[in-house]
Length: 444
Ligand code: ATP
Ligand code: MG
Image (cartoon, rainbow, N blue to C red; front, side, top):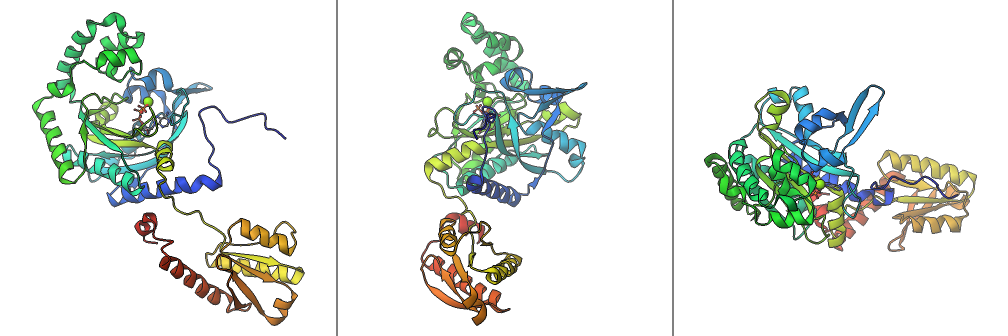
């Protein structure tokens, strides 16, 4: 029967045969973050709308056009469009900032933005992100950028460019805003309506406008780097030195301002030109004023968000390796009631030892059971019938080589199976089948 309700536009399903791609990205991101001292945080999917207005910024596209705000009875909430606001809220509310600094947390979560869906741009998408609170040092910026860079490298991605910029602190930004205002005022009539408003409230936002005309005009606008105060300029110089010392190549792009208002000093993006216009796989920076703005506590912080779907588009395009999905270790093909009981019993034993084992649940004949075992890629099969039961032995078939070996069906069964299994694993290492960088990285 045809389904007459389909998923909402801009959302995606992940079916079991693809979920290993998610597990790969999540595992590598998680293990890398942990090796840099970050612990996982989990926060609600929705927050009070005001939290996003006050952090993401009222003049940003996200707040002006993209938020999913839901009213339920007498309350109103917004589905998180990004992870930073909720995470900072949770860090403050749970007293993390009163513990030893820096506090470092990472998250894997869904975000919701009402954007025009296209390749790499969804309405529900997922981010791996992190926040570090407490350190004002440019070494923290280098640490966070290096972490993102390590994840991208471990995923096997190539040709990803790191762009960095400094957008200064409120002090240097005031002078820059003046310069931008006089620049854009001269071409006021050509700006889009939103940017006319931005000119008054937040002129730097014009540089992030997606309209081609505003983009074109913005090309000749003054650049922030010429307006940095001594402290911000020194911070940026040190960051560049640390990146160079760590062997991380970067490009200074004075046009990056990022789409959220809370950034100060460092902003950065990891970008690829291989997947069209949606090429930013990671965006982040420093937001020294955000925590104070939300809680009054003066604590500098920084972080980034990585778009998981975008990462996977690039990984697929570049043919990167994923962790291999788990397959059946042993399939029992059984004929007759007594053999079927034995298959169930041995399956239970195997599972207790952590193996993936299966037997027929469809009432298939022996031939069809073997066909099924082939289809699911079982590593071994074992045929059980009256003969096997009376002799107490059966033939274990290695489905890859076709080789058959005798195995006892008594309490020695599991020990023998272990031995065959280990032998097969060692052989596949010898063949070089298991030499993918993912496997050596995981130490498996
Ligand atoms: P873009 O300029 O592409 O709109 P952004 O500046 O809005 O990105 P951030 O808010 O910094 O992005 O989010 C961090 C990351 O999340 C982005 O670099 C991107 O990889 C991913 N991302 C953002 N919006 C979407 C979306 N609508 N669909 C899929 N991924 C997204
Ligand atoms: Mg955006």
